Image 1 (cartoon, one colour):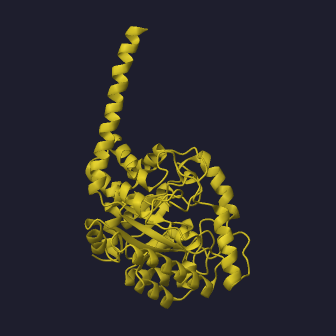
Image 2 (cartoon, rainbow, N blue to C red):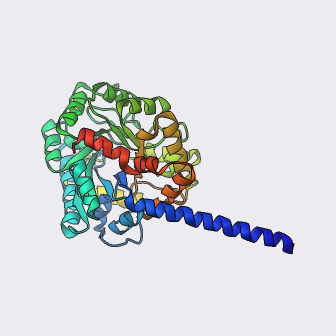
Image 3 (cartoon, rainbow, N blue to C red):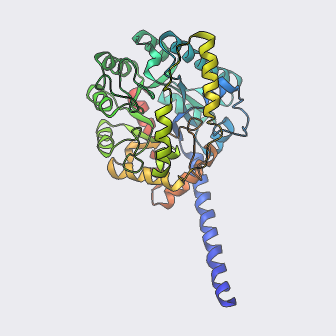
Length: 389
């Protein structure tokens, strides 16, 4: 027994040393990475909960402190409006959220700055600040008016998810009963106008038919800002292998979603049930009554305190591996969906844990060059092609 213990101890020490070396390598690489996360929902917490993103928050997954610690220097802040906000009400709520992120920018100009071009992003990150990229999450937010879309672009918004959990008047969602057979003619106009004015088309949440209609119309690369692989977790929000191949031909990027239900089939079953009930009961409300309903709905979802899940960091790596195998390493990125998911994978509980993903990718055999692409380089390429340098 003594002899066996003498053998086990050096092995354990060696394994510990290797793990420490891997994490140190990841930390060094993290400091020089251009970390881009194409989808976080944190601005909801600022609007509804009035949280101070300049402080390390005791809950949730994102604040300025943890973004810097994790090396995710350029998050896409989603301005998400529930689909039960209709027409002018959806526009009003979008402006409320744009005002909320402006409050953060104004309060911490030495720590975070708005990025409206790829060059902005690189310059801001190089200066040591967080580069905030703004995105809409739901095409209903333009109230079926291209002039509204253009005004959002003038406000610094640089991407839009075409649908959310329910269809809008011009595009079918992946989690609703098909109504338009994909994109309507107006929906195609929306895609063309986004191409023209330099806004990234985001196909997360859209139906499979809408996805292919978008690719038939767009002249620029698109992104799936927060989706994963249907081959590994079978939910309609994830992408099939054929979709991944088509996205690669388009030059686009899929940002891997960290929601446990997007990663692990065991967790996916619960997510499918939750999706079925989201926004199922549409209130016929406006103004203050609608605002009060929305605030209660946000509290009820309680994304700041995610539930235990089966998914782990290894599942995230598995989805990255799958995209690389099917579409190539140039077409995968990070789209955590932090602060907008009901559960998170063990090992990636918040933005500060991102070096663990870098270490896992390095351990898995990815080169530093490929890790740089995955963690932000691929998305930066799309930004340059669509928004401009």
